[in-house]
Image (cartoon, rainbow, N blue to C red; front, side, top):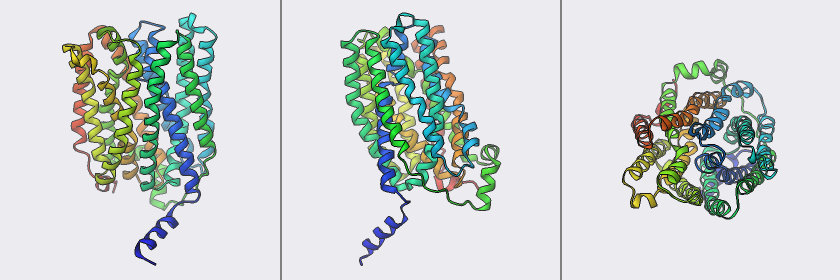
Length: 426
């Protein structure tokens, strides 16, 4: 037998049980969820929907605040709940029940609740919050299971392919969203969009229910103690983890401005509402291409470089919006470039920040670290609403300028991230 054949045999034998089945199930979930998320984009579709019901900028900003707060803030408590459980799948499957809430919002719109804007907004934000909270449960169990079911090398392949496929589909979703908004009257247009989101979320939930969870490996005494010590040890003794979280928070301040690009395009630059479809297409196309390129960069140079590239893109987005606001001209027509930068940034969270975190944390403590990191990031749920208040009190110039400066500082912090092998705790 040749050397290559021996190596291939060893690679096959090293794969966890049900690897092929789980790879396919995670792929369907990843793609289905990604397509659905394009239909309910936090940076374009949902802010545009809320703007049809209210003129309040803080309420528009509340879209991102509600989702990110509901998704991030409960995760430390969820991590504490599930960290010692031998099986995480029951929690993951239970959490997918929240995905039916988009059917509820769609049915309310079909029934005419949009004629009562206050009631429609109350129902919408309640469903958005509950969806985010239940998906927080899904995500923690999901990360723990995928780390056991799909080895690191194959995991990067899975993420890259899934983001490419969902990105390709997202281009079509963007075109479809633009067509629906242009051809159908309000609120039927958004009712149809949310119905389609519900279809793909149901498909993704079905795929998760079919996953075959591998058994949890026994932890050594040191790792077991770290898991029991919990978040205080992670925060106090792991300097690289603290630095990573600080970088994530500074880059996350891009959400001061991101919900208001749609309003800026329509109100200040006088672009038509149908351009929203172009924004979705630009964001998803950029995310698709970035996933492939950054996946290769991560494989060759590691997640640090992915983080730095995405962080630079996060600063370029509001800077371009500011330049378009001040100069107009060709930059107005090129405004979808802002969403190109958002697509690049969206592709780095898992390829960059999450993969870096999974590499530097001790084996067996993933739920604690992921839950702690995401709960701390919950502070940023206030950023979109704060951005709305800032916009009402000042101007687009101030909002975009301040966001650019803060995110640029975050990019500078990423330059000090250590290689993962040097960032592990002693």
